[in-house]
Length: 123
Length: 278
Length: 134
Image 1 (tube, each protein chain N blue to C red):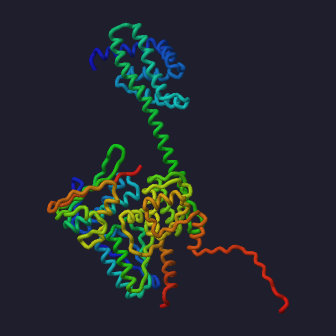
Image 2 (tube, rainbow over the protein chains, first blue to last red):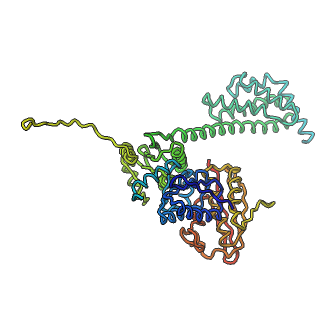
Image 3 (cartoon, rainbow over the protein chains, first blue to last red):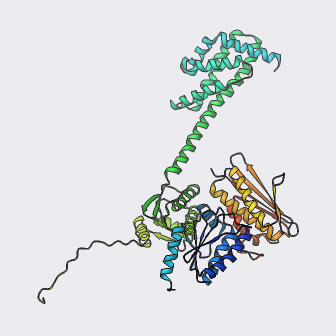
């Protein structure tokens, strides 16, 4: 099983998925991330999936789970860089990401988190 | 091949050689084509018959050329085939003159060969037609699907003409790719030039909007004609929270507002200053 | 990969293998990028189904031709408990394993031809075909 590295940039955690995710890696990532959000006091999580070639229902559910979990830990989640083919397939599959925020690329994801931070309560 | 057939075949080949000018002249008269046009073909046919193994590649190549040039001149494929078939008549006259049993038997074989070659011209014609149609369909797909940039971060797809499922799919895939390539967060799909949509096309439009949302971009659909609005409602297609605008201009104004760009109209306001109090 | 083109599905790591192999054959069959993504996603769902519901199974991945076009055919087979109520199993949101219930119905939407043969106690065979466009 491969572990996905979690990078920290200021108060944002960045996960760039570069491997073909198997179900074990997905579960491990969820656990690792929850720990890091708490220990780093992160206010935002960005998951970069620009290298991900397919998302099935299991991986799709991971995004919703991570977002829900992070929200409880007071962090916003943004999924960035979804490929058109992946997006079309998800729609056909009938899978919505359950209100997960998305952005076209990493830069726009960071901007979105800043925007959300401005609107939210000061911390 | 039996000995008889072999002899018969050789007899015809000899006739084609010895009476060549006569046959060629007759052929060009019956086919109403110039002898020059047919000579090359005739020679190629003689050459391939003279060699064992029935290698008709050269003949077929020339026939394809003849078929193309005649099609350009406005002849129907039947005309071209008939011109090829008339060689039988021309050769038959020589066979009759010869009168031998071998020549007559050989003529049956020759006739079958010419039938095949005639059919080949029709096949060539059909293939050429099919290629033209396919090229055009492809060009249409390419031509009719521009994605234009309206503003920094806003792109538009003006759809024109009847949408079928395949074309909608191609346009939509192209749109999504351009959103990624240009980093545009807003897209306007303008269907002013679309006379009608069916359930499948409407579904494709909806799926594209949802897919764009998954990628982090928003789409607005503009230019829905009253007829299309009627169709969509009648078909019971749910547009949900997808933003629709009457015109492309409205859609542009809306997307600009969403991107935080504001316009103020220049107003000429007169300010009257009361001087009495001063 | 075995001699007859079968791939065993017996653990989580095999899902990744199935996805990669389906991708390779999909490219070979001339499928567009979008269609590749769809069939690979469907394969991932169906392979996971076989793993969860039947404890494993196998898949054959073949390029097919019907005269005009080329395509890709996946056949998943397992010796599991079978599907008692097929209509319900194909309904979105119906699940017996605590998943999202999109596996079967979703996969059907991602491919051009979809066929399920199953009986309680006799295992399940699912055939899914995707044709190259144009």
